[in-house]
Image (tube, rainbow over all chains, first blue to last red; front, top):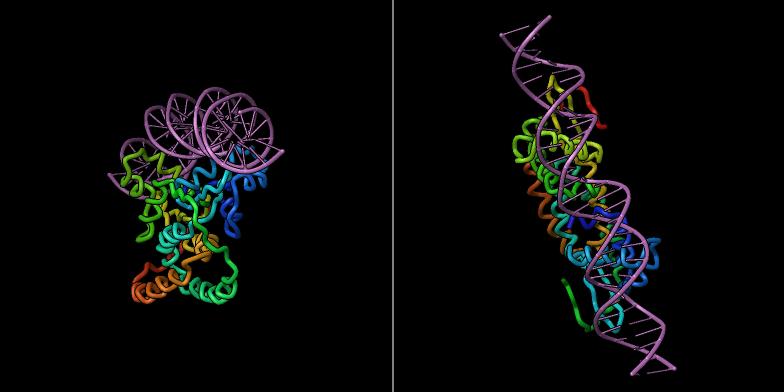
Length: 117
Length: 117
DNA sequence: CTAACGTGTAACACACTGGTTACGCTTCCG
DNA sequence: CGGAAGCGTAACCAGTGTGTTACACGTTAG
């Protein structure tokens, strides 16, 4: 999973998916590299569990699986805790309020085939 | 920096360094791979800024630079925030108290040559 | 001084990753 | 139907990363 994040292209894909669910083609269009290359990056993300894909018609929609990130954050926390820890918590707390405001207007779930891979 | 964490050996090194500062040789002894291999892993960690090294006599002590982890955690937070966020914060808050208790008895800083690379 | 120690570096072999083009398989549409 | 659309896969190639052994260099010790 850490390896999935190691690639800059995959990181960009994750950022793109942070806002909205996207079909493979549209993701590929936003990169200079070929579509098959992006397709393989998507497969890596899929197998790492960081994204989930949904088949709808002839296109395949990708979306984040936020729950998987928590594990990584938790692993990293054991190091952040060593020093400068309280400082970080303060920063997080202020973010919470900002985030709670932003949380309205998020895409509603629909019912189609799911491949969590 | 994400690439530095992508390797399992380097992750193990980081975990080892979480508890105490260690010389290169002792780190190498804990792995099955050759010492030069470990030495290069240490170089990667050094260049990524995740660890700092201190020359003392003829050995080189390595220690974590916890501040660098915060950046990665912050980057990951933008994804965790998408959903299940409050849940995570609760888990963090309970950890804080546990951690504050553990924070006494940490090695005091000494004055030797520092190479942050 | 010289020998042993503790580490990093160089040179090399080899597996893996990421890119490309060609192709196959479903699904929609005229 | 039959062709176009949308994606994934296969085969191939270049670059990179990781492991190994041999070696160089500064430091401590006898």
